[in-house]
Structures are given as C-alpha cells and as structure tokens.
Length: 324
Image (cartoon, rainbow, N blue to C red; front, side, top):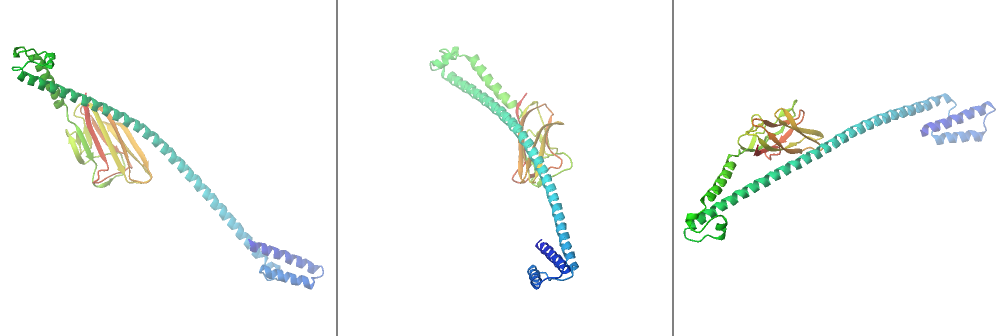
C-alpha cells in the first residue's frame, strides 16, 4: 500500500514537471529537488511516464484481489460460525430433554425403592411373628414338662393353665403349633425366583443395524432357572410382583446410548443418556406385575453398542417380590 502511494505521488510530480516544461521549463533547483524526491521514494525518475503507470495499476489490481479474497474468507467464516451455533443449539436441546427424562427416571427409581423397603418391612414383621409363635410353643412345651411337679406361674395361668396336669390347656398349645407350621409351610411354598447376570467377557458388543435383544451369558445366580441365557428372556414362573434393574456401559464418545425394557411385546421403559467423553453407564430399575408365562427382556437400540469384560460392567438383575 505504501508503494502504491509512493508511485502515485511520483506520478503527480512527473505530471507537474511536464506541465512546467510546456510553460517554459524548470529552474535548476526544481530539477534537483525532484531528483532528491525520486531517490527518497526509491524510484528512478524518467521522462517516460508510461513505464510507471502499469506498475501502479498492477499494485491496485493486486490490492483489489486481496480485498476480494478477504471478503470471501469472511463470508465463509460467518457461514461456519452460524452452522456451529445451530449444532450447539441442537445439542443443548437434546441435553435438556435428556435431563428431563433423567429426572422422571430418578422419581420412578425412588418409588421403586420405597416399594422394596415396604415389602422388606412386611417380611421382617412376618418373621418376627413366626419367632414369637415359636417362643410361645417352646414355653408351652417346657411348662407342660414341668407342670407335673410344680405349681403354674402367673404367665401360665394367663394362658389358661390350672394347677394340676389334668387341667393342662392342650387345645390352645396345639393351635399355636398349627399356626407356626402354617407359617413355615407358606414360606416353604413361596417360589424362589431371583437372578443376577453379566453380559460378556468379550468387550464391545454392537452396534447392530436393528434393535437387538441382549443375551447375558455370565450367570452369577439364577434361582428357579427363570432366565434363559440362550434367548435372553426371563419367563415368570408364577403370577406376582417382580423387581428388575440393569446397568449398561458404552465406551464410545460424543454419542447417545439407548436401552429398552420389554414386557412381552410391549416397551415399558426407555433409558438413554449422552456421553461426550466415553465410558459412561446408563442404569434404571422398576417393579412390574407379571402373569405366569410372561416374558421380560432388555433390547439394545439399533446403532448403539455396549461394553463388558471380566469386571462385569454391564449387568441385569431381577427377583420375585411376592406372588399374587
């Protein structure tokens, strides 16, 4: 740019010199001054002005081309920025939706945990009643043995015993024994159904072109043999309330991971999350009522993958809470 300005100034000086020549010439001092200016500008004066003009236009054309090139680059940069902003907005929208779904799933998990705690409390209460009944029977048996030789205590009298073995309250003792036996029979007859599984030791599974039923091949426990590692299906042996939970790990980065829980042919749960750094898990659980013969299983979404190894990073668990 400075060279162009220098050339333009020189051209003006030459033009002014030509004009002075036509009007009668220049003084000696004026010629010297022009030569000094030419040396300062780094350009040799010449009487042929046409040799300088093309250089000036070439410089101007080069400047114009540079200006056009910068303009095109600025437009391309602006277009890229707009595209990145659109992608960022889309990602933020999906993250917001994922956070909402996670909040709903956390609420469901809390409800399931409350149900499990309530059932555990009922089971504890039932065991307490059984223990109390057993203690009563033992006490009655002991008192029956000692009744032939000792007077009955106030406790024995409150249970209906009277002095003398001929007045022993046998029907009441038999009723307590029958109650204990009935409770024991109920516990013994309750189906024993529970399983805990790992997926594989082979590393990454998938992605697949279609939704795929996950077959957990590592069986830690499978009481009742209700889960089939061959088909990946859990088949309910009795009508009842069942609890299920799972955890799936994926090693990919900048991708979504999705997994479904199916009851027969109906999807009952869809869990997903987005991973920016890879090796993140998605987990969930629920309590569901199943009829005898119903099937329950996990399905991996098409295009997704899952990871497991000897550390058992991907698991599937379930058990019968109580029959109905």
